[in-house]
Image 1 (cartoon, rainbow, N blue to C red):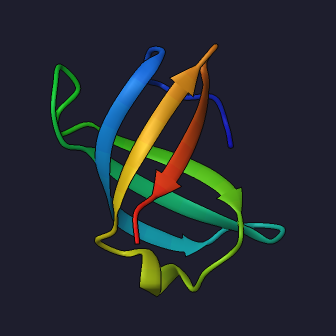
Image 2: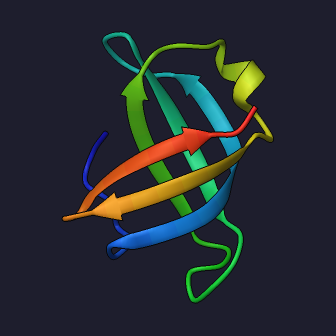
Length: 75
């Protein structure tokens, strides 16, 4: 994943866009659902895994530590 525009913390989010990125990655856009950053859309890229269309609308948790985000998608 790339560096996050969000400060360190944990954020509830939802996948609002997903597409195939460059070089075998998946590009995600996630909207933060609560707190000070509610409504912010965060664009991240990570390893490809699932079909991007299957990711749309999934709830997610963004965890940022030392400026590095990790995303956990909920099934």
